[in-house]
Length: 212
Ligand code: NAP
Image 1 (cartoon, rainbow, N blue to C red):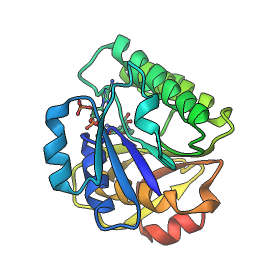
Image 2: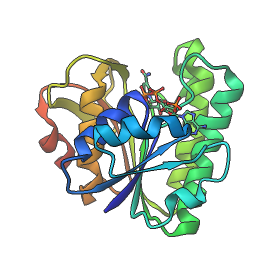
Image 3: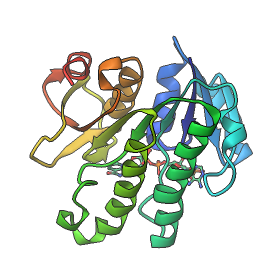
Image 4: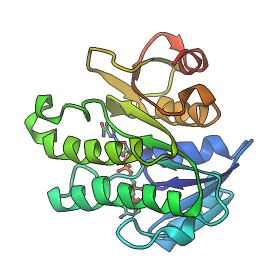
């Protein structure tokens, strides 16, 4: 499959591009700054495309079979960017996928996105944006999988996770393992039409994804 990686220059995105470099899928790294292209190709991106979630992303999707969406406005921006990227940018990408007939979309969401009011106060606006994007995706008719990690860390991946519709605890998960799960999910038909929470754990990730 040719896979558009949205947020390819991000911390998860770069890990994903490296993992995908050894196949079997072709990555198309979506970046918003052309100066990022060379580094991404060196990391193993099969192709790069310049597009901004605040603009028209339709052309970036041409010829793709699937999308992995791992973009985000980041904690350093204000609520306006959270709305523009995490909510409206994600929704625009979902709509563009539907229009282009790209049916498979794997979304990086967040633990807590179904209950923003129960989250820490400083995260509630972000969680509401993620909730709106996830709702739109569930109603889109696409073959979606919504992956909801806990707090992301830069610890080395272990290849072992906990994953379930609801884990009923909070916690952390290394970005390495999130990237590996995204790739595993892409090829796991049992995850279509599902959402699940993801934390560091004891189950080998292939086994955990197969059990969803
Ligand atoms: P990251 O390093 O901040 O990467 C986000 C990427 O999104 C960046 O590459 C950025 O591009 C890109 N982006 C931002 N605005 C864009 C736009 N308008 N158009 C196109 N691309 C745009 O984040 P991460 O650590 O990889 O995390 C990725 C995902 O995990 C996000 O969806 C985040 O909400 C979610 N998440 C985070 C946590 C956490 O603990 N931090 C927990 C759960 C879920 P540039 O490189 O050009 O800036």
